[in-house]
Length: 320
Ligand SMILES: Cc1cc2nc3c(=O)[nH]c(=O)nc-3n(C[C@H](O)[C@H](O)[C@H](O)COP(=O)(O)OP(=O)(O)OC[C@H]3O[C@@H](n4cnc5c(N)ncnc54)[C@H](O)[C@@H]3O)c2cc1C
Image (cartoon, rainbow, N blue to C red; front, side, top):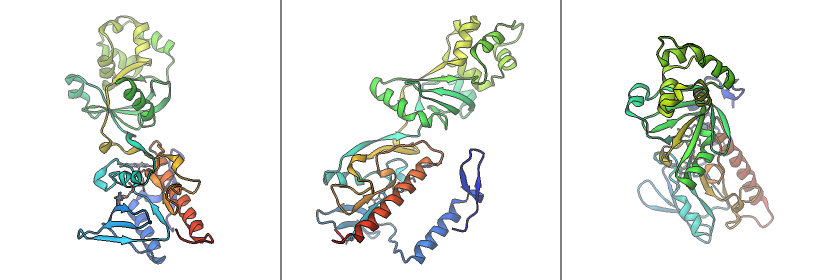
């Protein structure tokens, strides 16, 4: 498309300059050249049994179109202010399409922090942690202490496991290794050194390079008695339990799990109950972590659906 690419430190490929607006303009120009007609601000409201799509126009009037084929790309249910409110689920459900209820994905979790922790460290990032979900799934990454609990790239890939545990038991423990680059025996050995007149925070900063936010988190999630014993404290530093009480609302989540059950579509993303109607992107019941994987899945299923539609239109019977 004429945009240079560059490889980021993670090995991922980005448009040079990382300006989404330039990419969008080129895309729109390409669609215009292909004589694609766009009808912005039309809300899809219904689908009749005979395949007519009913839209609400910006002036409130209704508009009907009976296409030879349809690709739906209506997104999931997070960030509804962008228009992706998941209202389409009721239309497809009326046609018998199985819908898995939406749930937040790539999102924050709640834990009742003390006022002291929040006053000192709200918004503080804790980096280079090893995070473990209840089932043992783990992820290296970052956590941010927020007003309501935690957020951040490190927990997003663990969302499905934490969400499942919370739904089943009303509680989930996220276990954090604050010093993932040091073996527990080494942490223990450093903690066994005399503390002298150092405060705990100074001592841990000098021995383990634990910063203020990490130290306060340790204080928050440990018992006083843990500090009296280097073995117990080392174990806490390597496996600090953060009790999570709630998942954040879907409206705030970066993406949503749920949507059209994957066994409702064929290999070309066509709805088997609605021949000629294809679905792509976050409408479908997959979930993925951030880091480009969601966009990639949306593009890939869009590509798959578009090729499926072309094959559908070219089939001998033609159309619906
Ligand atoms: C804050 C944020 C950050 C993100 N960061 C990343 C990231 O770093 N990497 C990554 O891979 N992904 C990221 N994502 C996720 C990614 O943006 C989505 O997964 C992707 O946009 C999904 O594409 P989609 O086409 O399926 O749906 P959407 O992009 O949601 O598009 C659906 C469109 O359908 C329209 N629509 C819905 N219902 C109707 C209706 N009834 N009638 C008419 N139109 C309708 C909506 O208005 C919307 O324009 C992020 C998302 C958010 C919110």
